[in-house]
Amino acid sequence: GDSVTQMEGPVTLSEEAFLTINCTYTATGYPSLFWYVQYPGEGLQLLLKATKADDKGSNKGFEATYRKETTSFHLEKGSVQVSDSAVYFCALRGNTPLVFGKGTRLSVIA
Amino acid sequence: DGGITQSPKYLFRKEGQNVTLSCEQNLNHDAMYWYRQDPGQGLRLIYYSQIVNDFQKGDIAEGYSVSREKKESFPLTVTSAQKNPTAFYLCASSIEMTGSPLHFGNGTRLTVT
Image (cartoon, rainbow over all chains, first blue to last red; front, side, top):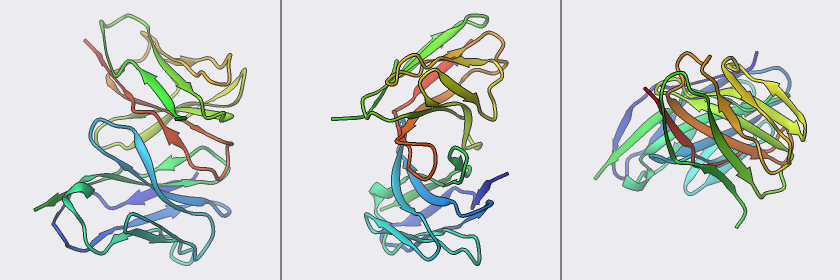
C-alpha cells in the first residue's frame, strides 16, 4: 500500500539556519503530495502541496518539489524563525484517504 | 468563517464506558475522516465517510464506531472494546476523496483511566 517515510526528529536549529526535512514515498499511480504543520495542542494545517511531478509547492518561505524520479518531496526553508517550531507531517493522497508520515518535530532556538 | 469544530477539547472517562466525540463542519465538504494521533506514531486513520449514510473502516477501526446521518456531522464513538483509547483524536474533511487537501479540527484529547 501507499506509505510515507520522513526523517525522524527532533530537529533543533538556531534561528536563521537552513532547514531540510526529508520525505520519500511509495505509491501506485500519481499521488498528490502535501506538507502539514501542527502547532502544540492544535490540529494540522496545510502548509503546501504539489499535485504532479516537478510541481513546486511554496508557502510562508517553505518550499517542496515533487520529484517523481526519486519519489521525494523534501521540505526546505532558507531561514527558520522561532515561530516555525512545530511538528511537520509529509502526506500523500492517491486513490485512498490521506496517508501520513510519522512527523518531524522542529525546535528553533533564538 | 467556515471550519471544523471538535468538542470537547479535553475529555476524561473511566475505563469500560463508551464515549462519543463530536465533529461538525460548515465547509459543505462531502468527505469526512477520523484520525488518531499517538506520540511517535503519526496519524492513523480510524474511519472515513465519502457521503452521507456511508462510511468505511480505516486502518485501526476496531473498538470504534461512527455514523454519518448529516453531511455536517461525523461523530466518533470510542467503545469499551478499544483496548488503549487514551489518545489525541483529529477530525478532518475534504471536498472530495481524491487529490484535495484535508481541513482539520483542533482535536479532542481523550484520557481514559
